[in-house]
Image (cartoon, rainbow, N blue to C red; front, top):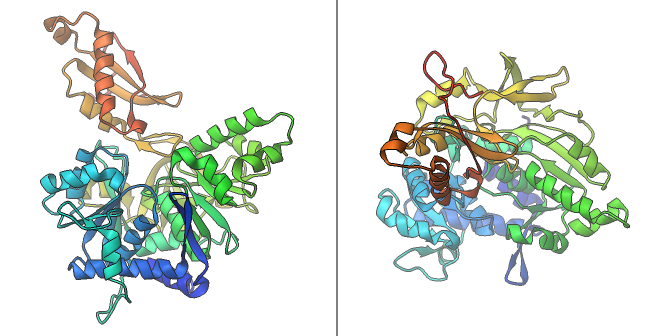
Length: 508
């Protein structure tokens, strides 16, 4: 990999040295736009490292939860660059589930956005391993939580001080939870090298000072590696979108030139562009919608229909389609403006090789995960002699471009990039005695449950309208889970599902 950095600390040092007082981040606080330079980024993340040092928490596991904020980002870098392990959590998870993950990931320090103060309350009761709870917004520390702002002010200075901090690029520095096909989310263990080389190994020829806007959830590897880590390395000005409700307003405010989207956003944006196209030329419609400067959309997280690339071309915007998975930090391949193939999900990254085994794509390289945290069997199933079994069916052409043809695993990949394990939902619903057999799957972009009810139980309990009762069960179930996992369609069978010889339901 030549002289490229292999730790995130080296990326921050490189950025501070080369871009210094240039804006690294822009974001809104009330009506004001706040700007932080690359020098601030290093200084503030070092202050967080010093906070951990003072609390005797160096090398420990730190969880962070909340939407994309500057405070979230310095928590991340302050942890990993002082030898700790960061665990970014989905800001939409129910509090009970967050606590379960905090315990499973052996968390000692919990940093939260005030939007999730419900979790902070629960942590005290349910997470005995957590020694410090830190709020990103509190002005003053209190019995509930320490105030991050205050801690950063009190711990300014160089890190490491007298004690050296040699980072091993190949040691775990992050655990990212992803939907498990076994019904239990799995903690993907990533190293400095896997995340860093994924971010820096490909020169996308994006000029320094390019303005981007980050819209996707930051706990996803795709958003963090590409929107944050890669952007810092090449000196981009990263504008933080403060809410899904404000995306179009913030496009006009920040005027980004490049943005990362998932297919669901791309398709809904296209519908709006199409609706607005009439008298005005298409390129003018796009300029008005996106603030005037948008040239490039990078698409990932799920499959994008190839016609979308051509559709956006008419509006003067290039879509670069990529492919990846959390287990690969996450980018495996991407199309570039000067190197792309229609219908493909891009060319393999320079640090990645691929082979096809029984139609399944296997990949190998420095971005591949170390394994699943405390899950040796699942690790063994997914990693074979250093090769990552992607679960995706397809082929690699002679030029190294990947073409996908389907999924081997049952995992549902939604258009918003979220992964949903059907088994996870099935296992929970099986607890209801009216459900004898169930299959959860995707059908026309919504999650559907097909149920064979227990008729004997229904008779005993004198349930006359089985369909209405099952719908009620689903409605109750949907209340307590993140919106993207909700089941929106119900199908009822009058016969059992067909089974395999080992008595498993045949899914297809």
